[in-house]
Image 1 (tube, rainbow, N blue to C red):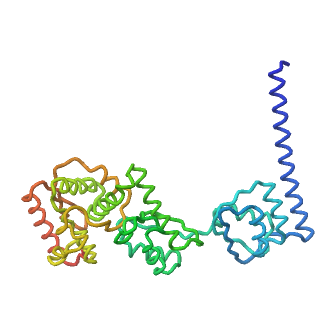
Image 2: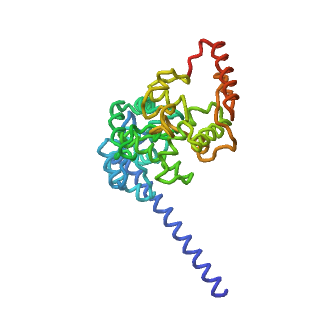
Image 3: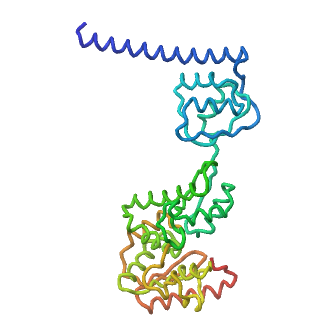
Length: 348
């Protein structure tokens, strides 16, 4: 046998010994735990009742073992820590549901089972305004909605630019799993960070975030069909390019506190930061939460010369895109005819 083959053989033998010793160590720890249960030093079985335990970031196996004993989950922290060390158990911060009087091995099994990890799940849909978002967060977490309102007013704490009219548009629409230990500020900060993550994925600079979110929120509200998002974006981009007012009814409705797709003469004449019939350029901020599609459409509008669009069927979302005022006027007549034929339509 040459030196190279001898060296490989010795390494293989060494690795085998390490594995065997590791297995033996784990088996010995498990055997000792079983013996402790028989001798009354550890509980036996899966326990009963319900106990909530929070593992905080940075806590060690010693901390976890001590908490398990103090909550009455295990009988002896030394025993459960021995198992933690023998199994190289990795813990993740969060809230977990356990039982009283569990065996050490059963307790550790639950702490490493995702099913025992308690979360508050909430899905925030695209286009929702800040008030609705905060109410849905409150409903999902049990945190009073007023706590979210107060947290949303502390712009620095949640990570948005200081001085915004509100944080509408900065809470990214998605499905979230929030740990019950999180407070309102932490939850909003998580959602703001998710928004920045989305913008970063598109290469949006920090200086351009507010503009993109504002533009995308209008596209989100105005586009009625997936394929129209990129056309709607082009219409508004074309208007901005030639200095034409956006004249978005969605922004007018937001500024007046309305919820309909149609607006009144008085609302379109109102002087506020969101009325794009009066105001040049974009409104002062987003009018709701824009999703991935709306952001993508904002950054990559379709090619076209359109300056107008008009939904002619609110039930199907069918929309006509026009380049000239005459074409647009014809589409408006179709929309008005549809409204007359559907008097019960709620306008949303």
